[in-house]
Image 1 (spheres, helix red, strand yellow):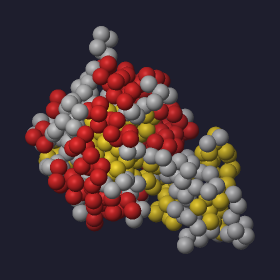
Image 2 (tube, helix red, strand yellow):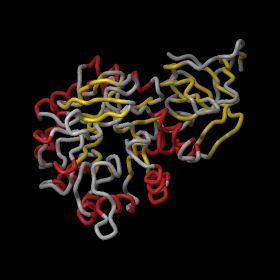
Image 3 (cartoon, helix red, strand yellow):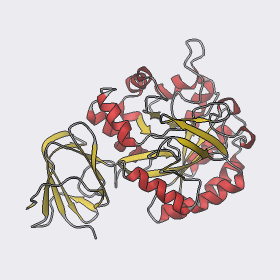
Image 4 (cartoon, helix red, strand yellow):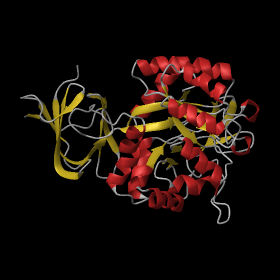
Length: 386
């Protein structure tokens, strides 16, 4: 079991706001109201303490993919943990249906082991008009029977399915997903405003990487973006890497959806946490240059090389978001969306001891997951006892 300890002196981001010179106590794997007597005290003055990040859309990292072997999956998970993502939903990419079914079984086992928080199927039920970095030859309509194959293969561990809901079977599949407690996400879509609104009424609750892989906002044909931004039932994913979104688009999303309806994601592929070079995204080859991933054939953006510590720092320094809003987008909102806010997403007694230590410049200095240091922060020469 992880030891008891107390972190003191930091600016702590709580649901009620920021507490200066705050104190967080950990007992075993949980945050507690008060630590055991004589628990070590670590002085983290001059730093921030925030909840661990929750990524609901992530394809890989560390040179490995969630579409790979168990070792590949663990490599990707551990890469993102070292960058502050203490909870990860593993995203697949369009492939042959039998391969996706097989991968769903593997990912469900790792979910049961607590390594990941569930499975997100991005494709194959998406529009060929907005396919992005997905193989067009492998796309198919979101007929409920086909969607059901993936849900069943995931053995209760499917968390989200991205669909182009305007395609045949799309709205019926949204209803199917809602009935099974799986998030229906609208993305890689060529839907109209009206078609998008219909899918939301049927139960869709997430916009997959809003603005990307969907029609642009138009004044006569507003398309899916307007419908997704205006509806309070929808959480909008944003990739805050400086490549996928212009800062004005991010500001627009926060203005219309509000901080309570935004979830920052990575949409990361294998190169996250590694470097430039050639990689595979499903069956497609990707070239990463200066941190930007694009398909070798066609040049479409192919996911990102983002880690959530970079997304957080960009949000509070370049985008000038309040720290509390950034924490909502990176921890609170995705935890709620996954139905896990009773365990993760905030620094409250009774929850998992998933927390991050950042310095005054918002550089990540420490990562704790379930009471164990993944990345231990620099410690003072002497540690007192409580």
